[in-house]
Image 1 (cartoon, one colour):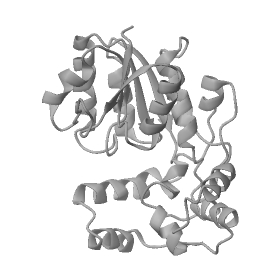
Image 2 (cartoon, one colour):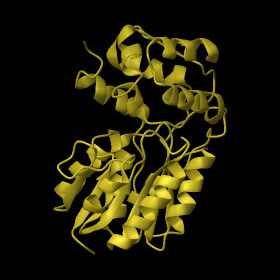
Image 3 (cartoon, helix red, strand yellow):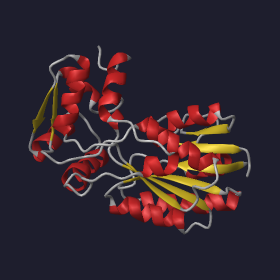
Length: 273
């Protein structure tokens, strides 16, 4: 296998962690982003050949989500370009309960390359590195979701699994479904954060239409508004309310618990202004 590994979404929650792990293993890493030295842009396929040159393995994280229109076609085109460039291995970041994500999985599985799928639950880090950070800081998290259970998974676990799949034998042809060790409601998760920070942080269920109208008022682009609508109205309908053992299968250990994530994030000041 060629030495270089291309990490698409290399500045994101999982990609940045993955780069740290690959670098620690002595792997030559190329960051796949629009601002990289060798840029990669999903919307500009003319950037792909240079990004794929001399690459042996690719971590495929599609932005903003595999559920958006055009994502499956983009993954298919990338798989074809990777094969033509001499890439040997693909590791796809996928989402649980998303039919479009499973279509992208099938594209990678039929690519003719070595493949591993890392299919993930809702990220813990959405609460401290993404759009839920400000609500947590404000003391009130309002979302259009009720008592649906979700097995939140930690981005560190995702990066550990992806690093193993990219650099080790024994992971080819595997679909690793990654969850945390417990099922929690969003109210439970906010309660864990409240306990870890020693702050009074409340969770409120709001009507979906009101929530989406508020996002539009805040200037969220229509495409992302559609994605949020899809995630809260369809994916968070209880279909993912079960645990999986992908972390144990891939790494031989248990996944990180949400309470541990909350304590660690609070200790480093993630929820301090």
